Structures are given as structure tokens and as C-alpha cells.
Length: 140
Image 1 (cartoon, rainbow, N blue to C red):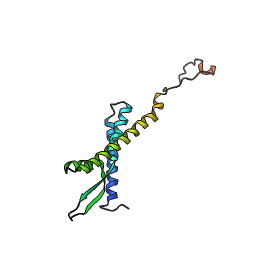
Image 2: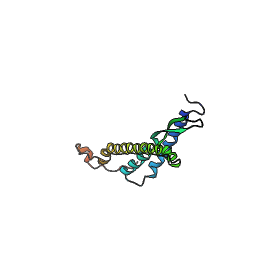
Image 3: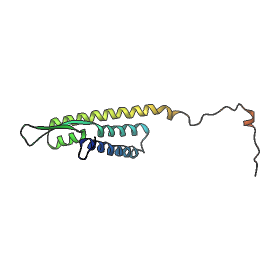
Image 4: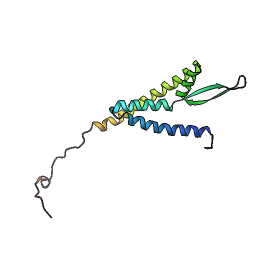
């Protein structure tokens, strides 16, 4: 259940804001053709939505706090703290999320490719001679 100061509320708000960023990225790449736009948008989405495990030392000796966070944040904190293990785990999860996002983008392009290549209007063969006969314009 969602309560104030809960971890589930934090994740829910993070994913809600990331959806806004995802749509903004899609519209920002509007100048690109469909394949690169979907590929880049879903790579960014995969980078935002990929979680990674982390472990932080507490004040008490030998105790740690473990949890999950967005992989970009885990990698950034690992870099700033010169923690090679956290940096490696964060970057691996980040690259895996981007790869999965890229595959989803290409799959969406592949799925919609047939619909785009179809001709816009199919020509009908005139079978009824009444349809082909010229009609005079009528006023009033």
C-alpha cells in the first residue's frame, strides 16, 4: 500500500516522471526517421527503467543497507565514491537495459513497417457503368 515516505511511492513517482521524459525524448527526436527515433527513444527508456542492486555501509561497523535503485544512479554514485563494484554493477545493468530497450524499439519498428509501406489509397476498378458516367452539375 502507498503511504507517505514509502519506497513504493518513490518508485511509482520515479516511473511516472520517467514516462513524461520518455514521451519528451520521443518528440525531441521527431526530426529523425522512424527507425532511429524508436531505437534511440527505447534505449533511453531502457536506461531510465533498468534497476540495479546496491549496498551502502551504515554508521555501525559491519552493517550495510542493500536495495535497488535506477542503474544510472548506482553507476554515478559508484563513480563518485570510487567504488569499482558498484560502478561495474550499475554500468552492466545500464547497458543491459539499453540493449533490451533497443531490441524493443527495433521490434516496434519491424511491427509497424508493413503498415507504413502499404499504398495510401487502393484503386478500385469501376465495375458499375453508372459510377463512370458523367453527371451534370445541379444548382439549387
